[in-house]
Length: 453
Ligand SMILES: Nc1nc2c(ncn2[C@@H]2O[C@H](COP(=O)(O)OP(=O)(O)OP(=O)(O)O)[C@@H](O)[C@H]2O)c(=O)[nH]1
Ligand SMILES: [Mg+2]
Image (cartoon, rainbow, N blue to C red; front, side, top):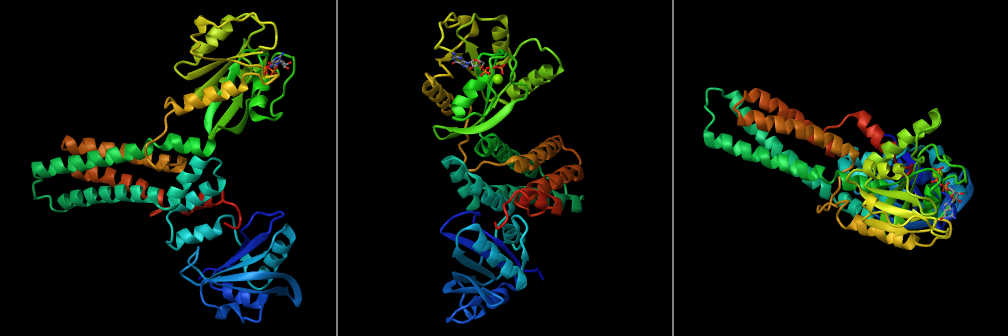
C-alpha cells in the first residue's frame, strides 16, 4: 500500500490563496486530525465537496480554510485526496503543511502527485509530460500544444502506431509458429504495406521533433560577427536588459551567452558569441570554437557588421561559413558617420540598419526576424502535436528497427529475424507512452517537476 504524501501545490510567495494537497490512503485521517468544523469530519464528507473550517495543530488555530475532498478513484492521483485552500503567503501554507506531516503524511517528492496519476493508470507518460509543458509554457502556441497533449492527442497517435505494429508482429509470429504453412504472396504484400504505413506514421511523428524543441526551448538565433561590431550591445538591446558584457575592447565576449526573449509571440533563444577573427590565445580560440557550435545549431543568424568601418575579408568568410542558413545582415552603429554601404558581395538579401546604442531600427529587425520565422523557412509542423527529445530518441530507434524489418520482409529474409526487429521497435514505441518503462526514466522525467505537482 502506498503512503500518504503532502505538499504545497501553489507557488510560494504572496497571493490570495495557497493550496496544500494531501494524497494517499491516509489523506482523510490526516484531514480529520487537522480540520475543525461544525460540518463534521472530512472522512464523512461526500466526494467532490468543499467545506469551511479551521486548521489547528496541537490546539493552535493556524488559519481559516476551505477543505475539498476527492475520494478514490475520482481524483488527480486516483487516491483519496484532500486539498486545503488556505490564505496565501509562504508561511501559512508552510505551517499547514507541517501540521499535515505531523498527522501522518510525508513530504511529496517533485512531481509525485502526477507520477502517482501515471502509475495508477489515469494518464499516460505523454500526458504527464504535458503537465510540465503546460506549467512552463512561455508562448500561447506552446500552451496550446501542451493542452492538446494533456487531452491525449499525442498518446492516441502513438498508441495507434503501437497497435498497428503489434498486429503486424502477431501476424508474422503466427507464421513462425506454423512454419509448414507457406506465406502467400498476397499476405506478404499486405505485410509490406502495413510496415510501410507504420514507417510513414513514425516519420510523421518524428518530423514534429523540431517544433517540439522550438516550443520548449525557443527558435535558436545566433548573433555572430567580427569583434567590436556591437553583437553584445545588440543582444542586450533585443533582450531589453544588460545581459552580456559590453566594452570598447575588441574580443570582450569569450563564452557564448544565451537567453530567451519573445518576439511577436515567437519564443527565441538568442545566443551572443565571441567575435570572429584569428584567435589570440587559448581562451579566445575556445570562444571562437564555441561560436561555430552555436552557428551550427542556429536556425537564423544575425550577422552583425559595423557601418563605421570598412568590410573585411573576415565578414565575407563568416557569411560563407553560414552556408545555406537564414542570415540577416545587421548593419550596426548607424549613429556614427558611415563608411559601409550595402554589400552585394555578402549576398545580403535580408538586411537591416540599426543602432544598438540608440535603439534605431530594432523594430525593423524584430519584424524581419518574425517574417523569416513565419515564412516557413524555419518550418512548423501541420500536426497538432509535437514530440519532445525523449520521444524523439525512442521513436528514432523504432524507425531504424522498423525499416530493417521492412527491408528484411521485402527481400524474403527469415521471419524470425524480421519479428525480432519488430519486437524491439514495438518496445521503443511503448516506452513513449510509458506502457513499458523503467524506474530510471520515470525518475528522470518526474525529477524535473516542481514539488506539489
Ligand atoms: N556608436 C555606437 N557604438 C556602439 C553601437 N553598438 C555597440 N557600440 C559600441 O561598440 C563597442 C563594442 O560593443 P560590443 O557590444 O561589446 O561589441 P561585440 O561585437 O560584442 O564585441 P566583442 O565581444 O569584442 O566581439 C562598445 O564600446 C559599444 O558601446 C552602436 O550602435 N553605436
Ligand atoms: Mg561581445
